[in-house]
Amino acid sequence: MIHFCFRVKRDEFCFEYPHLCQKPNNLTEFCKKHAYICEFGTSNLVIPKLDYYANDSANEAYDVLREIYFHHIIEDGAQYWSWAKPFSSRASSKMKTTFVYDYDRYFYVTCYSSNLHMYGSEEVETSNSDEYVGIDKSLYSLLIKDRDDQTFIPWTVPRIILSIYSPFVPNYPFLEGVILEKNHDYFVNIRFEEEHLLESPYETNCTDYEDLWNKNNKTGPRSQEMCKEWCLWNYHKSCEDCEKKLTMVEKPIRICSIHDDCITDANSKNILNDCQRNCKVSCK
Image (tube, rainbow, N blue to C red; front, side):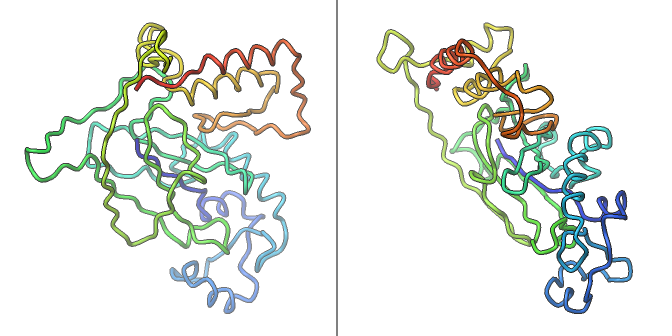
């Protein structure tokens, strides 16, 4: 599974919320320091008021940014506020849109993933390969476009985050991904290895999540990692109108803070512990 993440574009934010943007103070100095933002001209250039070459409306700007993800990005579409989905040479490959919360900056980013099947009833995309046939064994060829001048945070250059991992496992790209540099071609070589374990009564005592998923009418988690996340998600259901513990979501929702009332009783904690104990290592 291939996974790319992007932030909100500056132009769209400032177009929709002009009162939270302004022309940079000391424009000449700003453009010397951040030439990539000024390269398309400065006559209409405005930046968010984040107390950096601009007035300080940072709290309101970040609040609005969160509201964009909680409400507008679903209504308007992720590609309006963020970047378009990467172009794939495989017409059959569907890029799913998910959202991941950046705990360092306290807002979501938009992510596009190919062959993502953490839950749901869709089958995994497969490719037949034979090392003795042909010389082109590429699985994906992707074209990604973004622009440095569209950075929402002026003192940072926008970068695309790439992750490659199992279709069934949630991924936190800020820790597990790789930042890609612009104007580079990346060739990723992958060697596939598969380890098969045995279920009880053997010592490995694993769970065949794919078999379990099929028996449950193609519903439920498809990996040990996703199984544990669902246990935690159910445990925190008492946190109304906010979300905890899901790494990747299909619809952004407010992240629970330490002030949210999420008190659970001892029985709920026992249920959580039992649930997670049943999330055994995957057989393959």
